[in-house]
Length: 141
Image 1: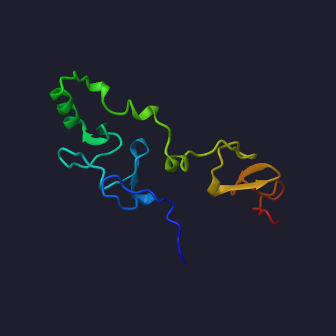
Image 2: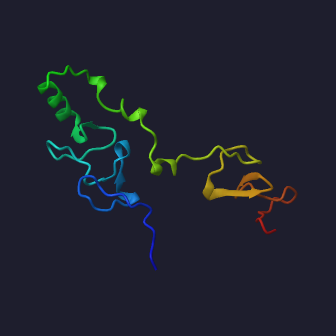
């Protein structure tokens, strides 16, 4: 039986298939989390501490060093997530974005794994009870 791995993307660093569980995708470019490294020192990077120039990844200290060598003045708050905020969310992040659907009983957010839908109303599984006796209901009862 063949399984769909959810992605056919290739890692920019090693050109091998990247599976969702091991993917980091800064700016929509796929990397294995183990391949997401500084080009200068080979140190591991995180989405919170990397910078990129011409598609090359750097840790913040090496990025600042390269900018200084090019004669660019560096302010400490000018590097980091500033460019990340402008990009659109990745397909993977949208899977964790949640929902705005509210439970008809408790009025709290109902997430897909706990949702029961009846006649266009949403319920938590624990809130979907008989209003008289309080026993749990199923969609077939």
